[in-house]
Length: 87
Image 1 (cartoon, rainbow, N blue to C red):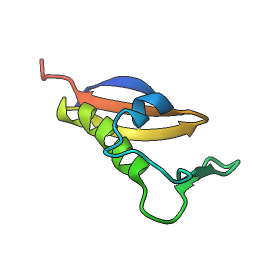
Image 2 (image 1 turned 120 degrees about the horizontal axis):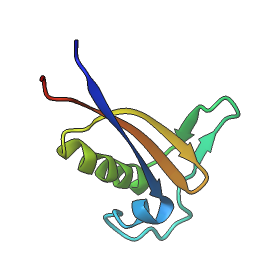
Image 3 (image 1 turned 180 degrees about the horizontal axis):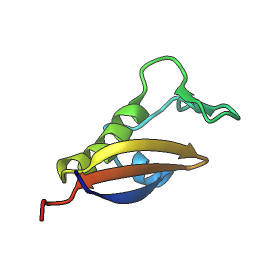
């Protein structure tokens, strides 16, 4: 039976903004979340989605598998899992 270890990471809006590939001159796109927890980005090219991908890819490169992402005001919370070595 496979065993797992888990990790939770919290990324602030500033963490994500550090990964922007270029300055954003326009009003930034918005992430909308419903009361049921469904979140989506508004339409159009979005440099913020690329910045989020970079933030998440850092953990993926370390061998962590993304399980779930939650968006909170000014935060992104990611849940990760990684298999434990067989003993």
